[in-house]
Length: 217
Ligand SMILES: Cc1cc2nc3c(=O)[nH]c(=O)nc-3n(C[C@H](O)[C@H](O)[C@H](O)COP(=O)(O)O)c2cc1C
Image (cartoon, rainbow, N blue to C red; front, side):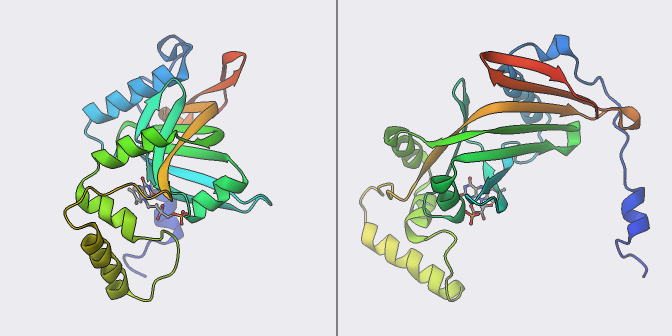
């Protein structure tokens, strides 16, 4: 089949990972600091949506699910993201407050993986972030019952219209079912693509402070 993405074409797709790599000296001892530096690099490199990350959660009996969310904060506590608490991920996190996240930046051949426990952000932080969002996005959050079925696009738009009408000229308040989470990482792994697939991998594990180990590619 001409032009189809058959197995041979997929197998032939590879870019050579030729760059300086990641060594223990440049990585340092603090993975949150390294993550901050890598984010600065991808912002400088104008990588699109540099803060988009795949976020995996799981039900209590271990059924995993994954979706993209935007990392909205990074500090010494961990990383933050915002969503609907009543969504599928919110329900899973309520039962099983653990998650894994991956940030992938193709143009610079880097990947970061985080795993850890998840807690809700304090209400004031969610309020402050919600207040900073454009009004349209605030109304969208009020109108949507994320992850629930809706009859069709028209029904969804009607929900938005109703929410807009209810709000009138007033300030849009954060719904109690929408807010932020903090992922407190217990492991963070940095991957940097290298020539011949002999990549660099540095794993940081938090016990009594951060411990760094190099992993084979
Ligand atoms: C680039 C991108 C960024 C996204 N950012 C968010 C986000 O920050 N928060 C969010 O709730 N959903 C975000 N979404 C939508 C989610 O991927 C997902 O559809 C939604 O959160 C429902 O997931 P759930 O049903 O597993 O809870 C984003 C999607 C994409 C493609």
